[in-house]
Length: 320
Ligand SMILES: [Zn+2]
Image 1 (cartoon, rainbow, N blue to C red):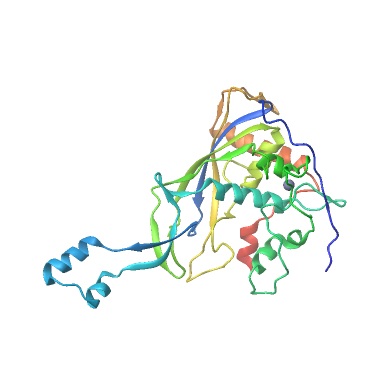
Image 2 (cartoon, helix red, strand yellow):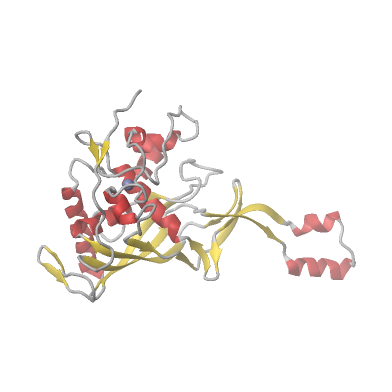
């Protein structure tokens, strides 16, 4: 089926050299939702129990093939990302996750579309069971939209909204992502697939900075995290194996984003929403935060009415 080329709505990106509109920081947690999470480092982990090795050697004074078996060496397991701060979900993975969800939540309307496909890759139609089939079921016809080449600021002065917010070649992002650091995350070595995965109920914490955003654009970032009615979002997908269904009775890649705090910095404009006013320098938490998240999301949905659709990816996947 030949797709009609959609016109990607593009404009000059906004000025990044001064502060205007909303600027600040979102304190966010990522919590695994009855599911394992694997974000691969691209490295394999080799693990040996040194105490056990010493114990056997002290007893027998030699090491042979049986010793190796007894030690139950762990080799060939794909490792989870870690840095000097411990187990982390890299900021780039979180950014990619939110960006891809937004790119795919916008769809063509009257021949135009608000976002190019920069993060969401172009794909070919897959039959049931083939690679990419579940991805297509979740995002339906949107994944096949012909949006042409992604924006590239080194070649063209105009970019789409998502590239203006998240950056593209030659254009700095307005939204910054720290690594999300694991809080007491326990990694389990699973045998099928051979990976180290964060166990269900793991929590990671990180910060998302933003500058020069309109209120409805801050709402859009929240929508990219699956936030709608409160500061805790619905279940969304992240990491490897998220489209695999059950593997050895285990679910992978279901998480929830939880907003802990939104802080406006001193360069920010006031945020006025309905009868609430938040001044530069204020930190928004608890009940105000719930209300604010909901109102910002509503503004965004209204602004992008007919262009944006909330897709409940996890409930679609669970029905496949
Ligand atoms: Zn773009």
